[in-house]
Length: 132
Length: 287
Image (cartoon, rainbow over the protein chains, first blue to last red):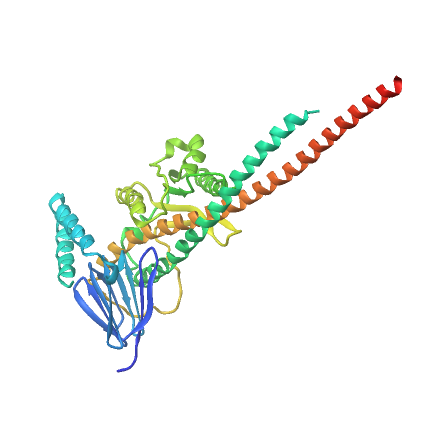
C-alpha cells in the first residue's frame, strides 16, 4: 500500500474546495487529530475547528476548517466542513478576531454545554494560531 | 384617431420602458451566472451529507433513533416552508411556487391536518397572506445578498426549536428546482422526518467517533440548514433565469409595439400631408 493514494474531497456548504488524491490527510477529529492513508478502516467522525493537512508527494497543503464531519473509507475521504479556508488565504487578524468572539461567547454563554463548546472553540483556535 | 404628437410621446414612453427591461435583462443574465455557479457548487455538500445520513440511518433504526430521523410517529401537524424570491418581474417564477404550495396546503387541510406556514421571501408571504396569514409561524425575507449559511441559520433554528418543542410532526419545504435556464419547476422536499434514500447496496461497516448518537445529533440539524440553503440557492438561480427570460420577452414586445406605433404615426402624418395638399390644389383650381 506504500504508493497508493487516497482520494480526498473537501467540501463546504458553499463549494467544493478541493478534490484531489493525497498520500496522507490529517484531520482534526473530535477525539484528536488523525492521519488517514489509503486502506483506512471506514470511520465517520465529527471534526473540531482546526487544520486539515493534505500531504501529496511530500508537499503539504493546509486548510483551516471550523467543525464538520469526515466520512472515511479505504479509498476515499470526504470532509464536510462547516467552513473551510485555505491557510494561505487565512488572515491572522481574522483568526484573532475569531478567538476574541469565541471568548466573548464563552463569557456570555448561558448553559454549560454552550460554555464548554465555546471554550473548546477558543482552545482549538489558539492551537491554529500557534501554528502560524 | 390620435394626433401625431400624442403618438410621438407614446413611442417615447414605450422606448424608455424598453430600456428598463433591457437593462433588467442584462443584470439578471450577469447575476444568473454567479447564482447558477453557487447552486451547483452547493450540491456536493448536500450529496455528501445525504450519503452519511443514509449510512447512519441504516444502523440506528428502531426506537432509539433521533426524533429528526424517525419523526414523532404521527403526521397530524404539518409545517410547510415556502421559499420564493423577494422581488417580482420574473414571469411565472413565484406564482408557480406559490401555486404548488397552495395545492399542498389545501390538500393537507382537506385531510383534516393542522398546517402552519413559514414563508421565506416577500413574494411567498404576500401570496399566502390573504388566505392563511393566521397560520404563519414567522416570515423571513431573502435579502439582497446571495444566500449563505449565516442567513439560513436563524431560519433553521426557528424550525428546529419549534419541532423540538413538539409543535409539528412533519416539515415540508417548497421551492423551485433549477433544472436549466429555461426550466424551473416547483419541488416539494420533506425535511423532517429526514428522508433517506433506500437501497444503494449494503452500507459499509463504519466505526463512529465519538458515537452514532453524537454524530447524528450534530448532523441532522446541519442537514436541515444545508437543505434550506440549497433550496434558496436554487431559487436564486431560477429567479434570475426566469427574470432574464421574462425581461427578454418584455423587451421584444416593446420593440414590436414601437414598430407598430411608428408605422401608424407615419401613416397618420402622411394622411395629413396628403389632405393639406388636396386642400391647396383644390383651392388653386377654384381660382
